Amino acid sequence: MRYIVLLKADQIVPPPPGLMEAIMKLGEEATASGALLDNAGLAQGAAGARIRVSGGNLSVTDGPFAETKEFISYAQYEVSSKEEAVEWASRFMKVHQDLVPGWEGECEVLKVFGPEDFGPPAPS
Amino acid sequence: MSAGRDECFDRAVTVSDPTSIDPVGAVRRKVEAVWRIESGKLIARLARVTHDLGLAEELAQDALVTALEQWPRTGVPANPAGWLMTTAKNRAIDTFRRDAVYRRKLDAVGRAQDTSQDPFASEAGDAMDDHIGDDLLRLIFTAAHPALSTDARVALTLRCLGGLSTDEIGRAFLIPESTAAQRIVRAKRTLAAKRVAFELPAPAELADRLASVLQVIFLIFNEGYSASSGDDWTRPGLVHEAMRLGRVLAGLAPEEPEVHGLQALMEIQASRLPARTGSDGEPILLSDQDRRRWDRLLIRRGLAALERAESLPAPIGPYTLQAAIAACHARAGSVEETDWARIATLYEVLGHLWASPVVELNRAVAVGMSAGPEQGLTIVDGLEVAGQLAEYPQLFAVRGDLLARMGRRQEARAAFGKAAEMSRNSSERSIFLRRSETG
Image (cartoon, rainbow over all chains, first blue to last red; front, top):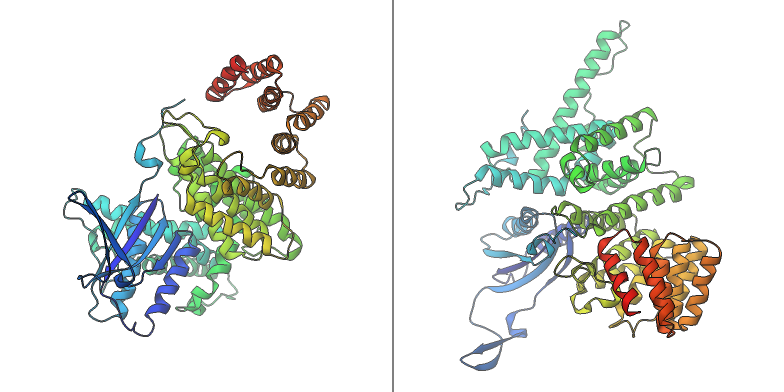
């Protein structure tokens, strides 16, 4: 099963000592475990845009946007249960909790559709 | 037994979902998730200290059982992995002390060992992490040791490195749980009886030992890959378990080309999973697959792994060659765009390493696509003259396809009829039957 984990939080500028290293170490561990397939940090919303269809119109708005919390990073995991994805995401959040005093943020664990979501094929 | 480490509990996290009517089940699933992530490392560390894979596996299991008993009451500790390790270590020390006392009682002379000896004494804190790569590699090599039967190697690998229960192994291989459990018990006994040390292979035996590991992982992969039907996702799940093992191994033995070759082969093959069965579960041949459904992330990872294999100084082997062939398909937008000449060459090289009529038949297909059906047919004729693959339906299907492209319709229909007759797979047979009518 594949999951995408999206972190939405306040930008941490500059990151406190040890944070990036702890994040890299955890990423290394998740990669070594065969669970982490892909991940990257995301630039501030100012570097991006939103495309919206509404009221019959398609509109493009360049960043930055009003929200204080931004998407900070994404990761894709391949695991055998939702709980395993939640465990990796929790470890990732805990690194921030431990190293950035007062930090707040949330991440979403989203399941990528896979064959297991469509029921077993009929026995042939 | 208690882990007895207060800091494990000082910030216990709750996993209870207020909407869940089954908080105990939620904790159990959380324990299982931690187990999946940590069990291999746990067993590997314990085995290095105890020099006994069987004992290590039992100690780890004990820790799991203790967690399943305690966590629903105490909450999940903030550092569940540390808790499991501490619990298993304490149990190991108890065992050693008991053994030491027992030995001392037996030993009238009193040359007893120091009963306070802690086998983990030198393993304080982070120092353990420094060894974990080597420990895991030892575990992989030991679980897939050639002294064991293939079935035993597969079962022990899934048990010790995949964290699978005997029930899961049984369901995955369509055998009773008791049979799976027996395979593991026997495997551990064999390792003990043959005094297989929990060590990395000596340089002289590395090639054979590595081949054994790669074979086990690829067997697990194929078992899952061939399970396109059935009502239990444990079997298709083997594909991902094998890929996970392949990725772990690639991280542990990055200097071995075939390790990356196998990883590349599995990633690229698995990228086709979403496209290789139809809505009714019927298989769809590679040439008929909707390539837009191929998993681009896995292809990208597979191609990167292949590049790593090919960039290493050591010579590549059959896994890398097969991955290179799979990559030709992965890179192509259609059957027509496929670099069939390169595939034909790769099969030729593969045939030198691994002489097999099936490889030769695949070369016939590639040559048929690149040089023309006549040249392909010459290779098929050669196989038939040599009496090879006489019972192999694909030989006749390939012949039929080549004949059809040469306009020899009647012979093509006859060849497909023969293929259908020989096929034991109902969906495959229906494909051949259809071609036996249309040519």
